[in-house]
Length: 325
Image (cartoon, rainbow, N blue to C red; front, top):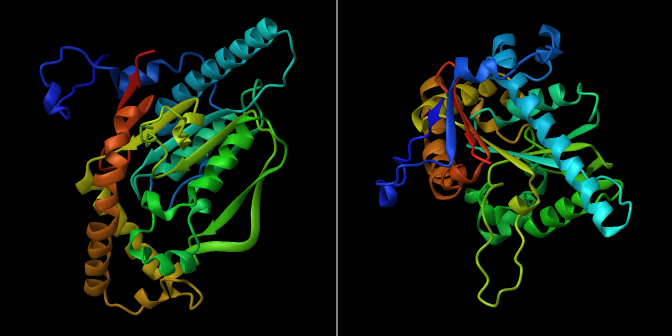
């Protein structure tokens, strides 16, 4: 275990400390302690992504220790809630523990969120674990087109932030049956009339691109909430951008042979491209949209995460950085 280097902070390169403790894979795996493995191979088939090669070893060595850590955090949060109620002389019901998972497009956020949900739901203290993605809070394509920002889909301005903040507030307040819109990657748009209902879970996992951005500082001192204000714990999935680019292109090329072939698919027009044309188009989309969003909005928030999972080219986690408490 060692400190995470601060070489990405040139203005403070003379600092001799880091807010993180850095673990290599073997060191982190030991923190599993006696946590039992509750998933089997058939469970992984339900959580694997299109590209990510999620193995039982990855679950045992990386996500089991993480589930143990989160379980301890949830217990501590529940104890704090009890103590606060005792101080206030009332008996409010427990509110959900909210976990945010962020990172670049194609880095494996969704797979991480699904496997963590599956593990956490098997802990007796918090069996009800829900998962939502911020994709559902994207503005509909028609609205993006009317605003002239369709080419900035996934950037902060492309989301209905007010609706997302109200959703987070309602969940954190313990309200029943809080609804979230549904997004279809097949249609590349919000699905009219479809909703996901979140009903007082023990834990809510929220997965998205721009979860950790801070609100701008108000000149008048009044509160300006942002999504990160509602998170109890935050996880950033990281990898070298050249590696993520290769993952994105690989995923694009696989979709071209599968989902894109359906005439109803939004990206059906790419199914007719030859291999070289499709590869070139994937690179163009990555460089002009996803990489730009990564540089401008996503990567700058990495150091705000409570935990950073860094992945190597084979999708295996190489290091885990845990923020000092």
